Image (cartoon, rainbow, N blue to C red; front, side, top):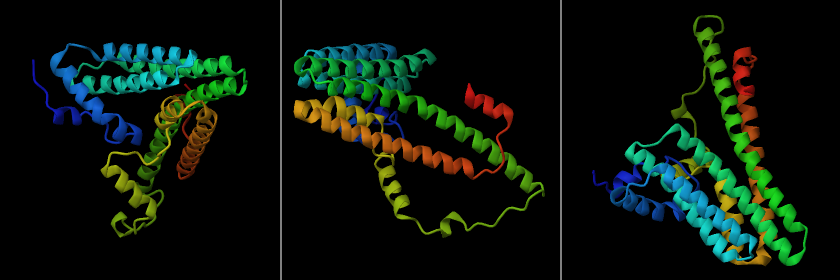
Length: 271
């Protein structure tokens, strides 16, 4: 069996990831991945199932009011979840079913932990605000992960339409408008910040689903009961603003192509 190095594991990391993963999870997850790859025969799907089991343990701790234990288990569950993809890419053992299992397992873990957190705190206090907290976390998470693939499909359709229009223009139907070359454009503050983040593998949108989960299921429980409602409210508001921003960017991107999408393209978006 081949002996992998830490550099081999680092090569399997995503080109850009959430700042929580890059700075607070990957440094440990990569070293554990190296150990698992060289010392065990555990499969990516086995790690996904382990992650889900740990997530269920976290939900149970939250339901029993053991916030610190629940936060610790959620962190470990997410770290193991990061390892399955690394093992799959490192050994080339990923499967289509594994992609589905990983995606669905994440949603189950979040919904169960949100329910456990809401149940545990409502049982202890009788405050209905915690029921709303659990429902709000579940709805925001599901919206985020339903909205993302749909936005990706819309962008693909727009790119197809843009390519077709450019082909028509090059054929002589419509002359291309002159634009200054990219190198001549002065980099904006946002572009400079994006380049800085890219050098550290951090995505430009700093509040995503992963940071939201970390705030709700790790940071707030570790701080204590008093932080649950305010931290979840702030994290949820920031996540919602991020989604609105991404939708606005998609809308601007779609407006750049004046022609209507072809019927077959719209069918792919609607499926």
